[in-house]
Image (cartoon, rainbow, N blue to C red; front, side):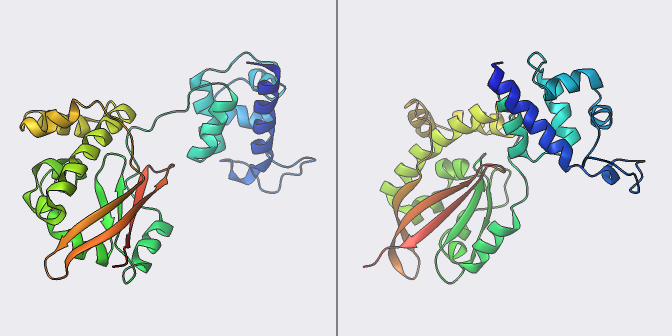
Length: 264
């Protein structure tokens, strides 16, 4: 680790230690008188389960490169958010930890966005495994009947290759576009979450389902299409056109898709 990186790591540790109130430590007295704010080095080292001597060297930039286990213990001791934990790892010149799966719950702010656009535009939220988590009233009017309660009923990739209703909604051209994107997205998801049994099971099922998935998979594509024009066959409103845009919540690996109606 270069000298400036060690200095940055030490400064980051000192900052977070100064922000930790002693009363948050189990058994500590809130009446303790201290000359400096935050926890003492010994207290922080005790919480992290490392020696105070080694922790002191980390703060002073004199320690060798800390292990991933040490960094994980420090992130837990400081109660860091995922973003703060990832920054800690980067300062130590380590790869950031990969979560085993996307977050299960949608942030309240995203849920509010979803609900507030009910009368404006369709909005959907799916996670990094391509499982549909939520859609607003306008999106339900377009796509709601496509999804079911089966084991993969809310998975976009599975529906792209198995749902006759989705092909009716999108038409042949739109369904072809979706199946291509879905295969690329599944490849990306398997790379992000290689131990996820749900994704692996989905891949096995689709691989055995027929030639369409195999054809798209053999393209070898990977990635996310952030913007696209989509046409939807609505049962009562006829052919509708939308510009779709995807926004990412990286901490939870949730994707927000907004469908802006195109003017005639």
